[in-house]
Length: 262
Image (cartoon, rainbow, N blue to C red; front, side, top):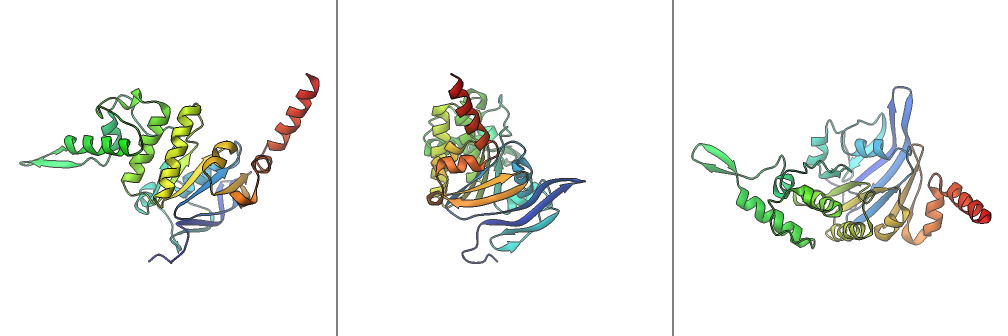
């Protein structure tokens, strides 16, 4: 039974060890319904380990993990999915030569029975895939076209739409804009904003502070497996947020040094 007003998910003092290596060393964060929480950190900050712990791939070594205010312990990624936590990884888990429809329903194909046999209900699946894409402003004329023919931003939106359609309450997005151009990034950020308005919680993992600041409500900064703090958008400026991330100050100093030598 969920507790009223509890965050959709919350972790408190999360620790994850791999033998003698401490990957997470006291991470605390929460995400609420209708909120985009941006998780910021440079390479090696612990973002990947945290994603895999939240999505049921890794079990935490210490700390509390709560869903709707209740402590849980996932045994597998399937447990996380069943709890409404869906993760969209950078590689998108899509097969480029398969159709948009096949990728949209992969592993959850709608079936129809003909006598003793069961077949994928392709008519229904095509209709849903096309409608879900149109809903986010992507008009695919033929949902049977290979998903690899879509742009990177469109493929990201297919993966997010798939998770939303299958009932996700929390979306964990792993660097969804890292390999995209300006126009495709704009498409994905607009869709993240739409998802938030539907009442879902979004954890947007990125090292791009500008992308985070465009859609984020709160920002949690990771550095070497620890949380440096969580800030509402009204509490922190873009430049200050950049400086909290590992390398932010060094990059500013380098920029000043280089500009002085030109």
